[in-house]
Length: 64
Image (cartoon, rainbow, N blue to C red; front, side, top):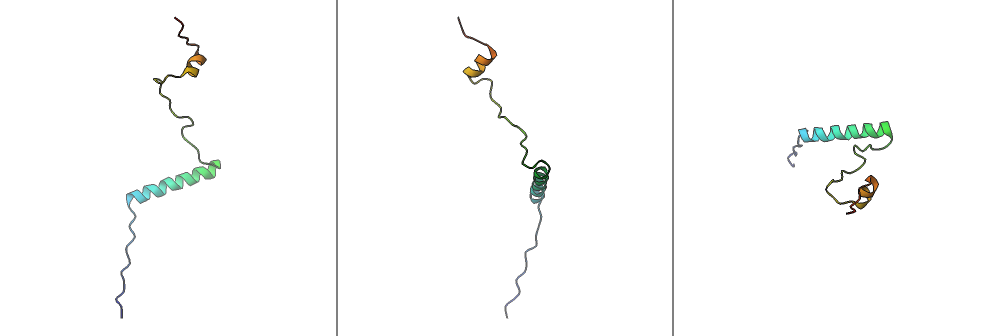
């Protein structure tokens, strides 16, 4: 006769709990709005980047 195998005890860690909470919040958000809601609609653009279209829009010219 074979010896019985011991079952591993299920441990719910803090990380597992946080993942479950995030998933539940996301499902509630989808149920309320019908789709996932993004927090930020546009990506932050650095002011240091040269952008000719933005300069034209604000009326800044480099005529010397």
